Image (cartoon, rainbow, N blue to C red):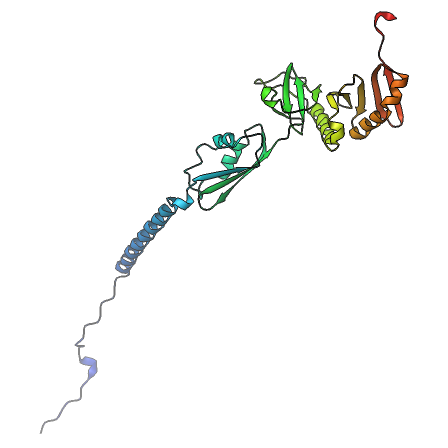
Length: 277
C-alpha cells in the first residue's frame, strides 16, 4: 500500500521567477527623449507659423493713406515715412513712425493706424498760421500758440495775417532759429485767438506789438494810431475803439495812441507837431 505524504508548501521552490523591477532612470530618460522630440516639433511648428504670418502679403505694408493735410503735401508726408512700405504690420512700431511725422514744423499732431489688408492710415492735424512774427530782422510764420512754423517767404504770399512785433526773447538765436519769449508769445496767441472769433475785427488788424506782456498794442489797416488794449478783453476793447474813433478824430485829428485799458475811461494822446510849431 502506498501512502502519499502531505505536501508541505513551505519547502517547495517557486517555479516562476519574480519579475524584474523596471529602472526608473531608464523610464525617465525615455520620457525626456519623447518630450524633447515633441518640444522640437512644437518649436518648429511655431517658427513656421510665425514665418508664414510675417511673410503674408496681407500683413505687409503696401499702401499708405494720408488725410487732414492742407498746407503739407501728400508727397511731403510720404517722404517722412520713407521706409515704412514693405514692413510687417504686426511688428512695425507705428509710434516711432509717428514721431518722424511730428518732425515737420507744419504738423501739430498725427495718428497712424493699421488697416487690413496692408494699409497704414495717417491722419494729420496741421498747425494753423495766425500771424507773421518780425524777429531779429526776419519774418516767420506763427501758429495759434505763437510758435514758429516756418520762415515767411514768397510761398506764403496767400496769407493775409497781421505782423507781430516784440516777440524776441533776451537770449540769442540757436541753430538759425530765433529765440521767442514765452510770455510774449502767449500774449500774442491770446490776442490772435480772441480776434479770430471775430473775423470782421481780425481782418482790420495790421500789426500787433507784444513787447509789454501786460499791454498788447494794435495798429489797424489805414490807421496810424496805436491802440493799447492791455492783456484781456481784446476784441471788446478793439470794438469800442471802432465805435468811438469817428468822435475821437473830431476832437483829435492826429492821434498818437488811444489807451482802452481803464474801462469806460479812454485816454487819447495827440501826435506831437513837427517843427515846434
